[in-house]
Image 1 (cartoon, helix red, strand yellow):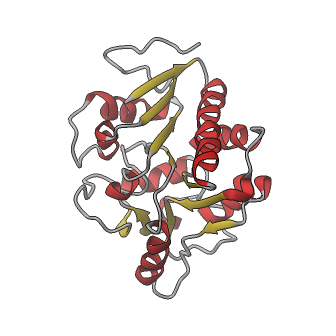
Image 2 (image 1 turned 135 degrees about the vertical axis):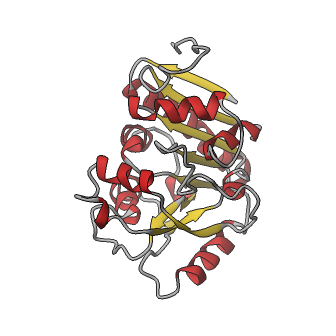
Image 3 (image 1 turned 60 degrees about the vertical axis):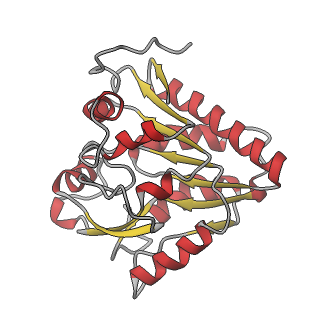
Amino acid sequence: MKVGVFGDKVSLAQAAAEQAAKAIRGAIAERGRARIIAATGASQFEFLEALTKMADIDWAKVELFHLDEYIGLPMNHPASFRKYLMERLISKTGISRYFFLDGNAPNPAQMAQRVGAELNSAPIDVAFVGIGENGHLAFNDPPADFETQQPYLIVDLDEACRRQQVGEGWFKDVSEVPAQAVSMSVRQILKAREIIAVVPDARKARAAKACLEGEIGPQSPASILRKHGNTTVYLDKASSSLLNEPVPAAK
C-alpha cells in the first residue's frame, strides 16, 4: 500500500485525480476502454471536481459502476448516489455507459444481481473509494463480511454510519436515513486492478489510523485494503493526524 499525505484536501484531490486520470488513460490505451468504480459522499467532492477537469480522457470509452445506494430512496432525493454521480461526474464528462444501482427497484436483490453480472463481465481497471468515519468500505459497516464472493449485498446500516450521513448534511435527522442499502462487497472491491482511496478531513482520522495501523479484520473494514497489491491512500494533514508513524508530506 502506498500512502500520500497532503497539506489540504484540495492538493490531495488534485494528486489523486492525476493518478486516476493516468489509470483511465492507460486502460483505454491498452484495452480500448476503462472500467471504473466511483465512490460518493462529501469526502469525494474535490476529487471528482478535479477528475472531471483532467485533459485527454476519452470519456466515451469509460464504463462506470458505483459502490452503493440506499434502498427506498428515489433518485431525485438530495442524498441519492445516482443523483450525485449524475451531477458530479456523468453530466460533466459525457459518460454514456453507466450502471446504476436502483434503490427503488421492486426487488433490490435481483437488481443487485443483474448489475453485479455486468460488473463481473470484465475486470475493473480502477476503483475510487472512501473510508467511512466508522471504518466502512462502501456500505460494509463493521463487522464486515470479508468472505462472500457476491458482487453486491443488501446490508443494514449501523447507527454510526447513519449519523455520518446526517453530519454531512444529506438528511436532517437519523430517522430519515434509510436502514438498508445495496453495497458492493469487500471481495468485489479488491478485484479491481488498482484502488485509489480518497480520505480527507479530521473526522476521518480515527478511521485512517485503523485502516493503516490497526488489526486487519472485519471490525475495521477498510483495513483490508492493506491486502491489495495496488492501493494508494490519499490523506490530508487532518486525516493523518493520529498516525503513530507520520507519513512525510507529499510535494
